[in-house]
Image (tube, rainbow, N blue to C red; front, side, top):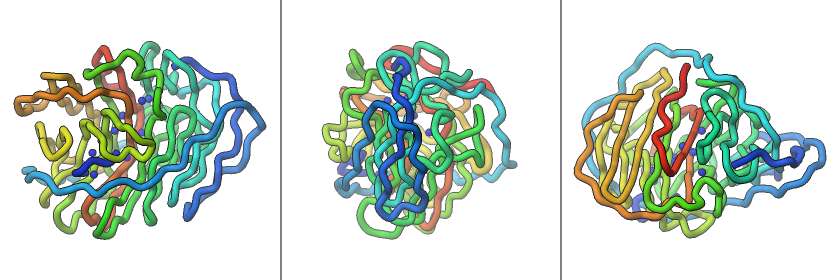
Length: 335
């Protein structure tokens, strides 16, 4: 807790989380081509998430230095479990499991209420309120999921609590391949927010098999005018580009700021701040160098998961404690 995953990134450009609600969980809709279906819950109020649709094809980008660093795996154990009211199941996308119990809904605080999601954030999700093998619902909607990709909550690995958002994919060449969820239009985290904001998420990169050039997006924040997240004006956290790939912040399209070598087998805290004349990028609380910046995109949507505009034989990662706030830096959660 899927940018080419650019309210975490949790879409597609030319280049390619509000006070608790009161509904009881209901069963999510079945996914077309999905692997797993969540069972129905007790009847309650609320509405389901929307069905994702396709988007436009992105283009290539710049060369990033550095390589993958293999490190020892770590088990996340910090953070209290997020709790609270639940809404209805989220809608399912092709290749995704069906939506299970939704996250908290309403205005104000975030979805998770564990130690990693303190009160007062515009949006924060620790993924504790969803059943295993379901796609997050509530304030999230499924956008797109390609055949061969999965995006669902599971308990195999987590940084805080016991659950995280698990994303996998084997993406062939051609078109846009993705497994992405997004905040819904009009989400309370973005009310009054204009062109500045802060994103924070934990990421565990388990597998990254790169055969050639790679252009993929994991988190993006910006102004998406359609539910398919096509044609956005946004800022993404990308895995990019030529072998070996690096993590960079992208201002659509193909303008890149800073870079950092991906690390395998460990939890890493990533943060970035965007504004009209500001871009800051942090890894595990340490600020990274960036280029001179200018940008004036409206911030209305946060998307997370993975979308790629190039072939990628295999990628697997977990996201946890995804957060956005329009006024203040969030900082890394305690382990």
